[in-house]
Length: 189
Image 1 (tube, rainbow, N blue to C red):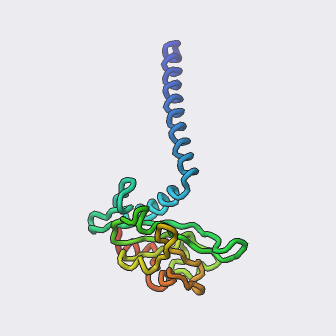
Image 2: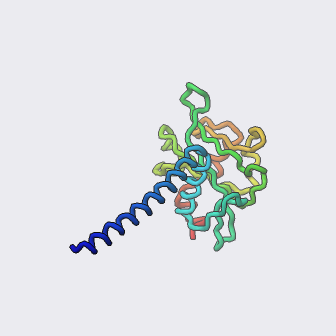
Image 3: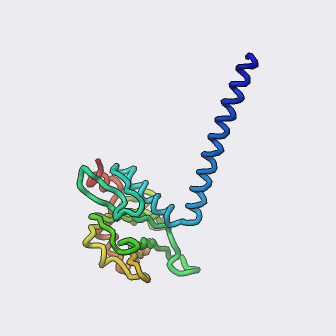
């Protein structure tokens, strides 16, 4: 290799390092944002799961829905919930999907898709026992009776044990639970 080629290589490497440093700075900023706003990260996770399954177009930030299925003329709102302890020092777990109708109560969608991490203790009780998630597909007009008022917002809270469900959200297991395969058949592109 000649000196000129060495100089070109060093310059190319410096350019590449500068590019990677800028990318690293950007990714660190995004990571900081997600760590500070865990609900934002959860929302994106739920949306990504459903967009991957169904296709469609994710909406812009602060849109009145999360996903648009243009070919079906359908707007979806997606909510994701981790497992939470229902009562401290208790084995009972639940899902809580908050702000079902948005911050100002003005969400505009036809279907609400709830995604919850499975509780391994009740895996066999869920419709899709092989899935890492439990899914519910709810028409907009059916959502209000499943909610409870929590401060300014309406939320859905549901125990992870189908046999013990008694809250307003209890009908989710019998009427609205759906498998990934059925959801894809119903809405997939």
